[in-house]
Length: 62
Image (tube, rainbow, N blue to C red):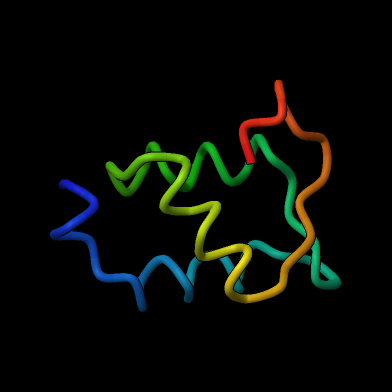
């Protein structure tokens, strides 16, 4: 599934479900991206749009 074919609303829903107290770990964001077949940047953009804080970042990918 490419980033174009993956529904952004689906990504937003999953990110909101996984985010605890307005935060989500970088490894979890990467896992979401892998499971949905999108780039980590797509998930990172959604996280930023939802104003969710990332923590435990790996190499500053987000």
